[in-house]
Length: 377
Ligand SMILES: [Ca+2]
Image (cartoon, rainbow, N blue to C red; front, side, top):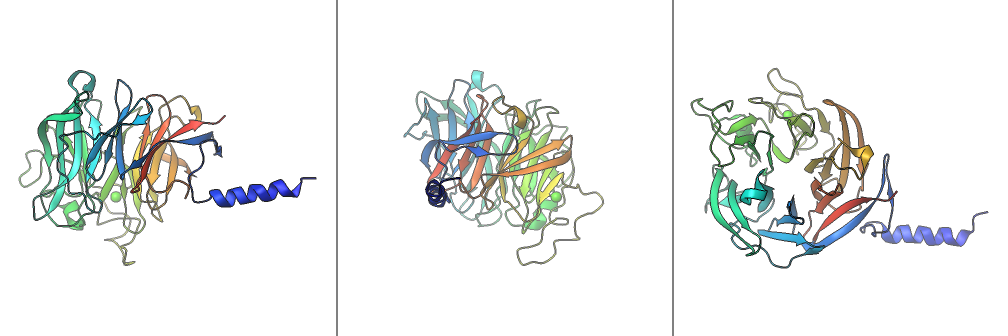
């Protein structure tokens, strides 16, 4: 017979641990792998994005407006000098950091952030040269500027990724101005496609159309905060926040309309119906959607070899959901969704496969953390 005392002790331990981060030694079992969550660093103010450096270590943005370096197992206390002034309010601030595909040779990095012109705030991208030894950014060059529109602090988008041909994609949220997502003359609610120097490729779908922003590649988006390049096809996948329900996963195709605010699987926060319903001719259907919302942020295809049974799956962070979601697709068909770490770590903002094959996360908290998942088998 099982002795009763150890069971009570175990129950007490579970009670004490619930709501707090799992200790490094705790093994978490999931459908395909057992893993542990390691805390690499704490004390990060709303860490938004992580970029792995080819020489080891990583850059981390703090939404408040700092760029930090994690190297040699430690978070360096010095922030980089030369980071642009950001509008750090609500969802705004310093957002993504992305390395140029030829970073090892040119040391160029891209920062997306919300900027304020004294009247209104918008999404901006500036490219810099990283001086790692001098702890500073130099040679700032404006790559993209939205249109100052409203003095609010939500829906900036801000995710960036390079495709295999070296074009830069940037998500721009609709700033709460829903109809802007259907208006090609306004950047809000679109994904932009740019050359690495910010110039506009001639083959962009709306380049040359009168009244259209030529940077626009796709439109009809609400607020995409996850984007990743498919490791097989090279296609750019994104997810975006719905309103009340209706978060979506989509693949970007040139010139397509992804429907916001005409179609959605969610409702307005008031409970009111959005647009015309879930379908409309000429508008894309998502590959996958979440009702209720998880508030997705961060997205990575797992491409490492530490978790072989996860290879090719998408990992998505959840803010409201306070979870990590693993989604398996066969081609473009969603076949399995598994929810991990629900209510264990807090709001998950960033998700990346590290060059070492571990899965890295950040938590979106005032005292945010850099975490990684390691196998426990
Ligand atoms: Ca849509």
